[in-house]
Image (tube, rainbow, N blue to C red):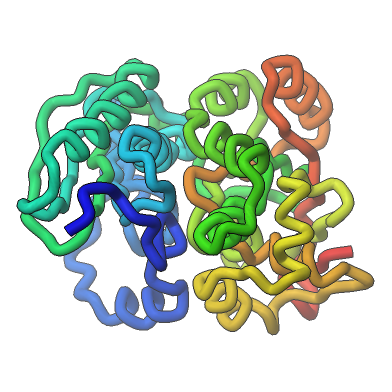
Length: 341
């Protein structure tokens, strides 16, 4: 066996099960008795679980892992860790501890595993957390991620479904990672574009979350496997609508060419099939439709911000070097859930 990580067919968040499959399975699970201390659980389709343990303290729990989407083990470890840590930030929390989740072929060079774990450990340290152990499984392929515990003030939890009509939608990272990784797998992506995408995927959402904590943010989610519109629909929760201004959406420029050349992900098409009839596109070019459905690995935060705070929040994020943008607004519910214009 070749002793290197080879780009997987469904690496990163493109390997996630589709939203339609998950909805059917989860709807059949026994729910058990309600616990008033469980502020956010799996049935809310949020980014992590939040459990209150005192008047001013709640724990945030999450886990995430997937196959590699880049061939460098160290970089893969960084990306997978940043992606898992992101769920804590999406809830407005602070990272405390993390545990490794590893699947690795026993016949492979263990130096590869060491580099994956080194990349992940460095991101946990950057987040201010402690890597406290983990579990490993011998497998035919590589998978890596983290189980993460954080803390949050229960009065300041950022759930994904508490936005209000008139809130400004703010996105903190560029879109198009899935398309670029697909193009890279067949040798079509430029080194410059992949370097930009990797820089984005290895950037923690820590700074964005810390800045947001100073403003009136009503709802938040991170944009990952379901793409922007998929996670936006979860934010709407059947109670609101949204209007997206596609010219304001930040994206990797090279993704436009690759999308127009149909270098797309299967996961992106699953996202379109699941949500397409809930979205109205008005004079939107094909490439942008695909970018909005594109699954993101270690994507940015999508926030619903009070209109009185949106400009100041956006300015501070840009001053911090984040490619943040105001991309639309939440609206009253209408005939379709999301209008892109």
